Length: 100
Image 1: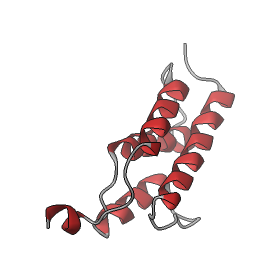
Image 2: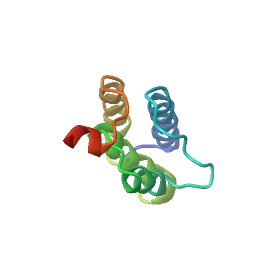
Image 3: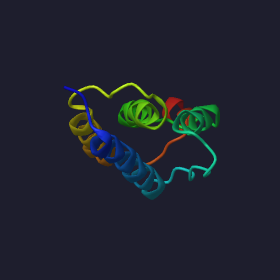
C-alpha cells in the first residue's frame, strides 16, 4: 500500500509545523522561494547545528513535494514521529559554540 494524496498533504503540513518549531527555537525563517533541501543547505552553510529529526522531515517533505512516485507506507506516521522528536530538541546553537 502507498500513501494517497491526502497523506502526502499531511507530510507537507508537518513540514510547516517543523518550520514553526525551528523558528520558535531561534532558527532563521525559510524564504518562500527555498525548497526544503535549499533551506537545510542554508542552515548548514551558516554553521547551525541542525537536529537529525529536521533532516529526516526535510527529506520526507521533499519527496512529498517533488517526487511523483507514491510515498512509502507509514510516511505520514513517521513524519509526525520526527516532528515530536524535533519539538524535544534544544534551541539553536552554532557549531562553534558546541565545539568551544
